[in-house]
Image (tube, rainbow, N blue to C red; front, side):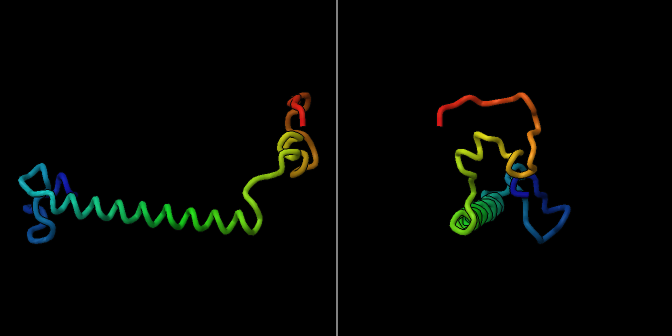
Amino acid sequence: MGLFAQDKFAPGTTGDGLFFGGNLKLLGAQALGVASVFVWCMATGFLLFYVIKQLVGLRVSREEELRGLDIDEHGMEAYSGFQVFTKL
């Protein structure tokens, strides 16, 4: 770990972390790894959701949402007596 690594436990592998006399090299390498994974996940996620949105859509229509998704999905209301009064 970039902060707590000690060379005495694994000699010749990573060196000492920042809290044990090491420099920012190990912590910087780990921060670069974290940033790289973050950028990859965000880009992949945006691409995936863009493709899904173009193919099948991510949202239901306004009418379906106001009517209640339980009716469209299951054919019945989950909470009878609960109504949302809005103007369409």
